[in-house]
Image (cartoon, rainbow, N blue to C red; front, side):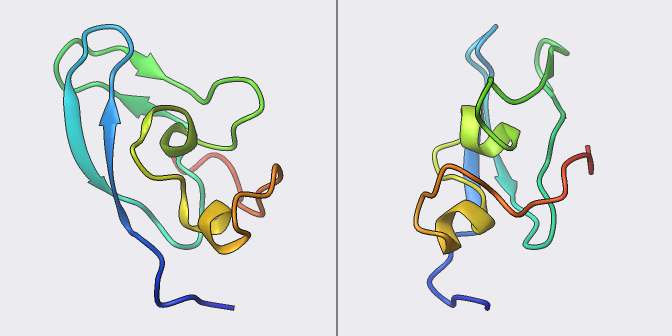
Length: 80
C-alpha cells in the first residue's frame, strides 16, 4: 500500500567527516551502502537498521515510514 504522506528526501550525514548530502530514497528497495562524496567512507547500516537512511538520514526509509517505525523493514537490501 502506497502512502502519499511518505517523505522521499533525507539528508545523510557521514559519521566520519560530518558531510551532509540530500538524497532521494527509493520506494521499492533499501539502500544498503552509501559512499560519502566528501571523504569516500563506505557507509553501511548500523546493527538493527535496514538501510543507510535509517542509520544516518534525517528521515527513515519509506518502508519504515509506511510501517510507522516498526522494527522490521520489508525492503530488499542491497541496491547500493
